[in-house]
Length: 94
Image (cartoon, rainbow, N blue to C red; front, side, top):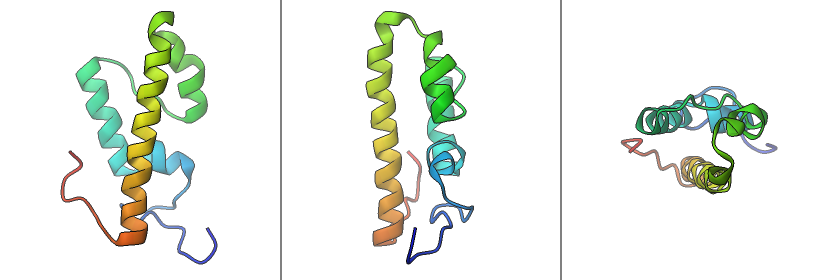
């Protein structure tokens, strides 16, 4: 991340892929909300998600879960980019 601080613009912790998609307060909120809504344990990392975590779902549902995961990653990435490049911080995670 040459040319910029490597701190998360959303929470101030060191920013990396693990942080952005799983540890940041925004990511935790999203995963915990989905977890409570659909009654599952949230994944702990990308390797966990595409390993043992996804195998907890019935085989016919896994492709839909992967699309759903991609959508969550995309929203988290867009939210992060708005904070970094446009100084936009959402006043609500919802």
